[in-house]
Length: 275
Image (cartoon, rainbow, N blue to C red; front, side):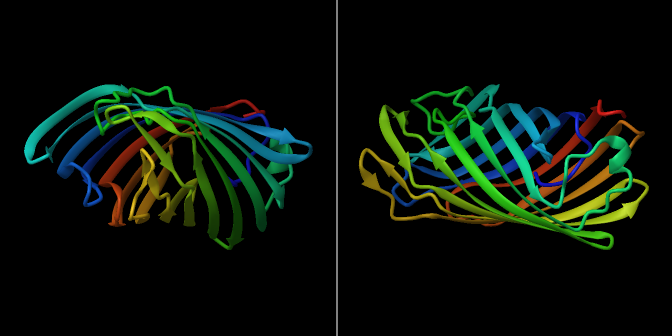
């Protein structure tokens, strides 16, 4: 979210993802031993901006998924198969320090040192949702996620640390007409990127989520989210305007929520801004 790029460049990303895993639930949950497979197609668009002389970006992400799985519900094995849209996400990012808005010509001589920036992401409840089911593609609620981050380049390495919190609206149609409320979920991410040359780069990432205790019909959960994931990315340029990204991640520790392994491949095309 905080990397710099020439102003006026457009990015279109199309990807495929496959995840497999389970669902970590509380002891009071009627669902146990969930096994879930999900295939997703992802379409995303981003544009770099000049925000009063600072580099910025707007992006939107909208996945479409097929999910199949089974779980023990109140002692009986039940299956679930759904296909539909996930909730779309919209984000605005701006770099306050170290990354001025530059044309393609000026950007050619730019050398990153320290970048400090922030972003705000909003998720809209437009995805597939069935209030009689616990597992859905959509969440039937809004969220807003402000994030603050820093990025530091050291030779061929770039280190990025970001931290933020997700604030949720209330879901009044949760699992049989109940009301779901959730406290803010804090998240910290660390990325280490290494430039291999010729436009090729690789990265290792870690994400730690904590908090987000829920309340259903006024009854507060005894457990909070305490999840850790690790991932890796490899970017391979095809030509001046196209590249391919390979990504994989896995849950190291999952207290609540989706516990899955993920593999994804994405194609990125960029244009505009003098390219």
